[in-house]
Each structure stands twice: as C-alpha cells, then as structure tokens.
Amino acid sequence: MKQTRQHSDPLTDATFDAPSLAETLGRNVKALRKDERITKTRFAAMVGIGRPLLNKIESGTANVRLSLVEELASALDTTPHFLLFGAPGIPNAPEFPPTSPNWPLEPYV
Image (tube, rainbow, N blue to C red; front, side, top):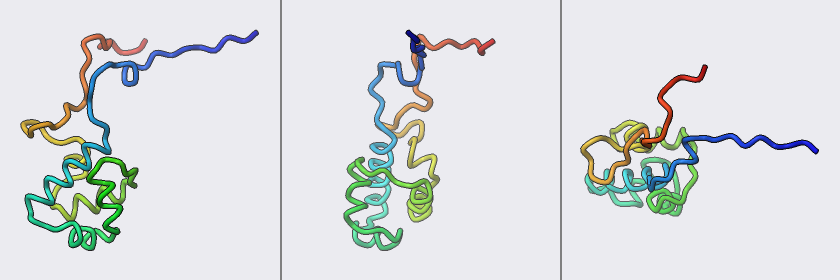
C-alpha cells in the first residue's frame, strides 16, 4: 500500500486571524471611494463594471481578476499593492507578510 506524504506549509498551517485578500480589497476600495466622495454607481461606471459586482467587491465576496484590481487602483489613484495589502499605519490594515513566531528562518538546504 502506497503512503501519501503530508507536507507542512507555514502559510496555511499558521493560526492567525488575518483578513482574506478579497476582504482587504473590499475594505480598501470602499474606504478610498468614500474618501473621494464617489457614489457606487459613478465608480462602477468609471471602472467599467456593474454595480452588483462593485457591491460584491466591497463586501469582500468577489473573486476578481488582477487586471480589474489594476483598474480599481487606477480609478482610485493608488496602487494594486495598497488595495490588496493595505499600508503600515492604516487602521485595520493587515500585516504583510503575516508573521508567526514558529516559522523557520533558515533557508532550505
């Protein structure tokens, strides 16, 4: 009988409550759009998407293409990196990369 190997992955084995990329994207898009005082209808038109998709993006439930993340960032005059990961000093922004005290720091040999 063949045995299956179990691999440990520190990125998926870590136990921390970091928001998903979709949630972070949604929170950042919504905050920047509101800061600019742009309505959902107008912003959806600026980006070339429908309002239902914008609602899903802002609620953190949409699975969007990277090209759409770039379009969202351009319309909000920011970077895709900021939309996906936030920035230090921004309240509720995720830490990137997430840290775990048990991750090995030595390179694989």
